[in-house]
Amino acid sequence: MHIVDSLLLAIVASTPLLLAVEGEVLVQRSGIINLGIEGMMLTAAMTSVMIGSFAGGIIGAVTMAALFGIFTVALRADQIVTGTAINLLALGMTGFIYREMQERFTRPISRSGIDAIAILAWIVVPVVLAFLLWKTKFGLRLRASGENPEAVRSAGYSVALQRWSALGIEAVLVGLGGAHLALVLSNGFAENMTAGRGFIALSIVIFGRWKIKGALLGTAVFGIAAAAQYALQASGRGLPFHLLLAIPYVVTLLILCGITGRVRAPEALGRG
Figure 1 (cartoon, rainbow, N blue to C red):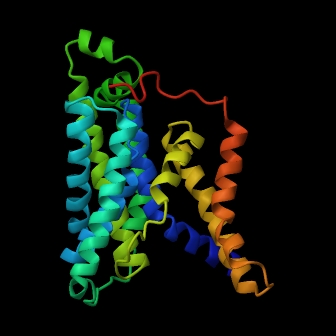
Figure 2 (cartoon, rainbow, N blue to C red; figure 1 turned 90 degrees about the horizontal axis):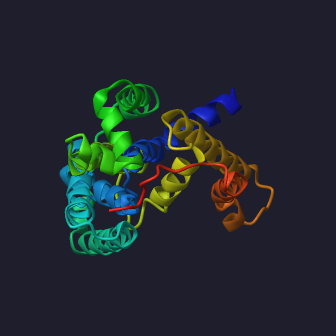
């Protein structure tokens, strides 16, 4: 039972990461690399605590996604540079607001007994996104925008509209993920509390071969590695603390090294 409880805990703890991965799969399928997902999640965590609801997290993520979209979709700026700028902006902005308005972050947060967001992330969202991507005309146009945007334009459809739609869906998912991290897992906000989850999400998208089932598997592997880290910490075997913290990230890196060259990204990924 102890092992089962640890696995369930790992799954719940990985919920914010999974929501980010699911959103990023959709966005990258449309041809966009949203490197700013870390900043989106961090902003969502802060705004969810300030407003005191999951809706607050969505508002924060949507704001950052809109800023990213204006530069990359509308102005066709470099996606990597823009994403990096979004992350730096979010890190500085959230840190400044947290230090200047600490009283807003010390209020008690009410919590429900059932983690509905975890159920949504692990069961409902994967089914809905898989259906959306592979069984609808919207999904066909979105995937075509990531593979051959010229063909989409020739057919009379707007590539920008497909990418804005993907960004909007991602913003909602990442907003829920950031809010879940702050309101459920952490019961509050702290500076840089996302701790690289956005970057891990980007690597899991590659590991999962840009598919929803791959997103589930990759997140589960990371969650199990994180659970192993916690178990080793609790065992009291005297292993270096910082070495244990690195376990999930080392596992992710090793997996990525093993699949390098064996995956095919969407053809137009990263192109304006």
